[in-house]
Length: 350
Image 1 (cartoon, rainbow, N blue to C red):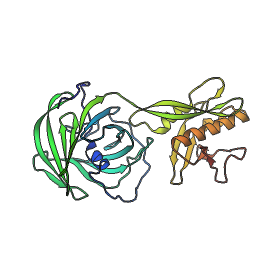
Image 2: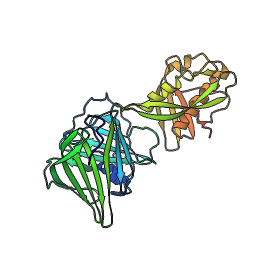
Image 3: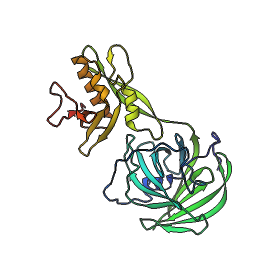
Image 4: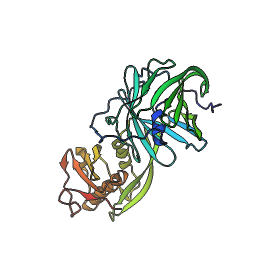
């Protein structure tokens, strides 16, 4: 296989191993109830301590493209969060996105959680559902382990030459045997996962790495609702936002709401106001806590109403929330005009 030699960089992509398998029916499983604990994100390391980084290197702000053959869908992946020795990877097959969480330990890398049908960026690095080995030492032929679904994963080749984006590299092959099919992955030195093949009695289909984009942030399209100064009416404008590895939604949403769109519109967040916290509960109620500067903003009554609805509609639409509750430094914001119910919730208009 000859790969498109567009970029000369080390890449990740080994984490696709269980991710692609899960998405295409290789390893479906029932998981226990999700346990998600809020945890502060530390500074992003330039290179996390990965014990197996020869074959599983990790790079921020990079996009990996895979080409499907024989009815295999194409796949794109990128690193969303790195939290110490935990990584969150987003995968997109052209139709839907899903997220997988990976954890590094001294002698192995594990997949520990899966979130399907992901439409927005959210930090799941504290989520734990199961623990499956992706790759572990020693990297020798015959090294084998049992997965949580009962399949057997074995290193079947080492030092195999493979033509990669940075030239010919040594690679290792890992084969996972299920009851009626097998999955074969090839990992290249300094590159990561370069090929994955699904085989059963009737068919064989392959996914191959063909392009890597370095220093490439993700883009998301967000609906920004702007309030007209004179009428208070909202105008919906589609805006592209740049999303970096380890960047929380509250950061790029704050920047978007600070955007000055013209003298006829009220700037939603001004005077140094930032979104301090934002989260959505199981009842699809979004809680937004703003910094204290929000109370100092000089709005007339019409503008204040417009700013409030701009916040509710922009953030509620992004999170697909039913209601939004606004607080300032943890205290309930005094909403006037009967917009909120007895719980302080404002309904998002659809």
